[in-house]
Image 1 (cartoon, rainbow, N blue to C red):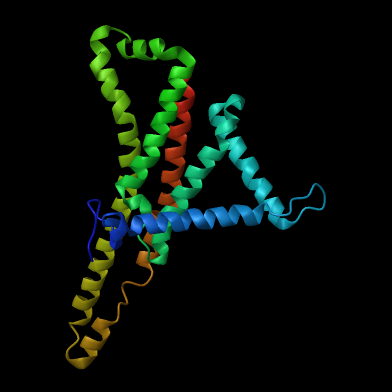
Image 2 (image 1 turned 45 degrees about the vertical axis):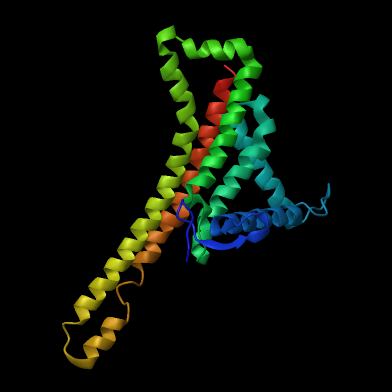
Length: 247
């Protein structure tokens, strides 16, 4: 199977558009967005003021949790960013957990996390210009002295890059470590039971006894805990950078 420059499998190409490759990253990402959109529509359908359903109770709980999350870390004046932060958080978690279904995790593609980071960078720049004006924004690069301007410019550029590669690197490293451990367990299983002579040893060596349990434990960390943690960190950095840009 062909892969793109980021290592994502290419499913097919669109000849009409000049052979644009459609990678599994694009397909899974749009699938995740579709699932999240349909989930939101289902949760918010038929809202009532009294005698609310369990579905509405779940929806209200999620909205309240998101509002408290943004209010605690950014302040009351920044509640307009609740939908944006919530969308990134949900998309990040669902994209990372898609690997549990045997799909390519979009967050294992640096183009995905870099696109999110670029959007955050645009918002940060917009907030700085809106708060301080273009002159104040440009003057900030010369703080505390003019000689620091090149370093401040590099620091501004590296902000989205560091956010993207932090998220991408942790997801990919977890995938690689899990695959290496699983391969090592298969090899150890074969080597252990090959000590038994004859067909019995060959039969037992072909059954992955040692692979039962350990990969599942690793999955709890690298797939579940790490996915939630990376989404949390990315959103925390997003809120911190945006709110500090107005200072």
